Picture 1: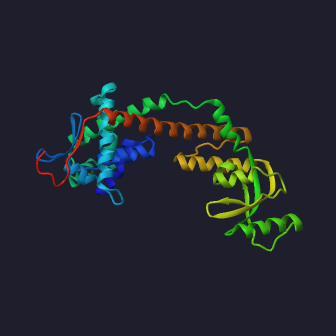
Picture 2: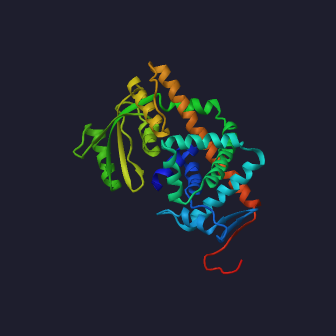
Picture 3: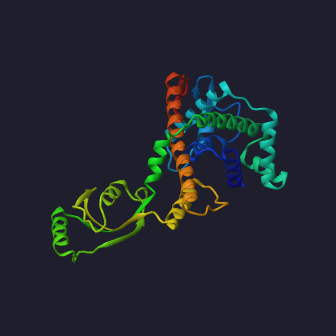
Length: 314
């Protein structure tokens, strides 16, 4: 039941917020209720983070220091959000009602709260805080713009595909010998691997650069990537097929977690869909960078004090 509550709160409160930020926000939602006798662990300007909140937010694979750092960032974002946004009681009621409906029966909802040590007033407070932070993130997202020429440049990388053979060697001398053999005889006794049609962004950048520098039937010189040497043979190069474009679009959708309700028909419409998804991905990257810059600026101006566990007086 505890896990069910955490998942439902996470899905409802964080819908639409980029995954990395949503995860950070989640750390502050699935917590035990605030206790007046609780010790203060962190001071952030005029706000505090309690010892029980830190303890309840610890997760496997994440150090206590990292958890505290993320909680400080979220408190700073909340404090910044309060300066420019507000949440009405009706909005909180609406979000809470949707959460109750998601449980089916209201008694199950309150039983889950009780099992986790959360009362409704605490949940209302957390809902208000998350709506505020969502509005701050949304306001930043609205200001994100990707230059059209950058979008066109990125889309062009998906407009051509190629089919290649390649060989991998541990030693440069072996790669050099094989290159000469290929140039002289057009064949080799070394094992050759095949890759069916792909676009440049679908492969590691270093490997794609080798591939797309070649014309059909051209052989690349041995090129080092990490601790190995690669020879690539371009078998075929062509405009990306409609089938490949449809596959690429599906991969974009899968990565973004979106559902494909209407599949576009025809090459141009599929390309338009890919362009839209590319823009979303690039805006998400810009948004993540902007939030990181905002947090950095807020931390530079903030009063932050962290009490160690073994510190008796503070």
